[in-house]
Each structure stands twice: as C-alpha cells, then as structure tokens.
Image (cartoon, rainbow, N blue to C red; front, side, top):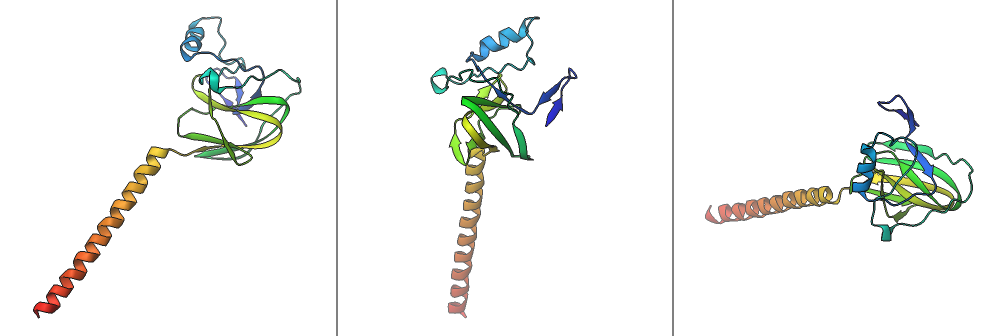
Length: 171
C-alpha cells in the first residue's frame, strides 16, 4: 500500500528500516527546519527513551517489503520477513499513546518514530505484526458509563419492588 503525499512522492504506508538512530524530538524538529533536510528520504529516527530501544545492526541489504494483510479504522496487520537479527517496521500513521502493537500475538513496546509516527522492533524471521488502537481512558469511561446505568437500573428495580409491596400492604 502506497500513499501519495503533498510533494507528489509515493510513500509506503509501512516500510522496513535498518540502522535506526535515536534522536531527541527537539533535535529532530530543528533538523527539519534546515533547507537541506529531506524528511521524506526514507530515514527513520526513533524518539522513545534511548534506554527502551534496541540497536538495529545493518545485517543484510536484502530488500524487505512489509505486506499489508488487513486494515480498518482501528487496526492494521502486516506480514514481514526480517532477514537479520533485528529490524524496524515503520508504520506511517499518527502516533498516539492509545495505539498498541503485537508481534505474532505477543504484546511489545510501541516506538515513536519520525516525531509523529509509530513503529516496532521486529526480530529475525517471518512475523505477523498488528497495530491496534486501544485507548484505556475511553475504555474506563465506557465501563463507568455501563456500571452507572446498571446501578441505576438495579436501584429503580429495587425501588419499584418496594413500592409495589408497600402498595399491596396498604390495600
């Protein structure tokens, strides 16, 4: 899957990257302000805490193309075959803390890449990588909403039963 951006350059929705350096968000934004900066050159930079990241050795130069298997509003699933010990799957969709990622069904850390996007480190071999949106505050609010309605229904039912008993006693 490829997107056409404002610069009329075809950009893949997802791509495999090697040699992924860490850079602070502020430094990345400063670099983009310079006229010689080419933000769409294909380089991927990660912005999580450097202690949380892994180094990605430049193993082979085999071209690796992630295949989009499924896409909907709240998830995207890719198949990828990583030739080296580690690789990085860049997903060109907006980063938000509510996004999660799983490789072969196992949850793993989501990495902020190129300031506004997301990605994940991928181990060697064939894998299914699923990005999915699971905003915890929304889920908690939804749970509180249903709990409040259930409590209101129980209180209304209890009050109704007591009212009916009182009415029978007085009749």
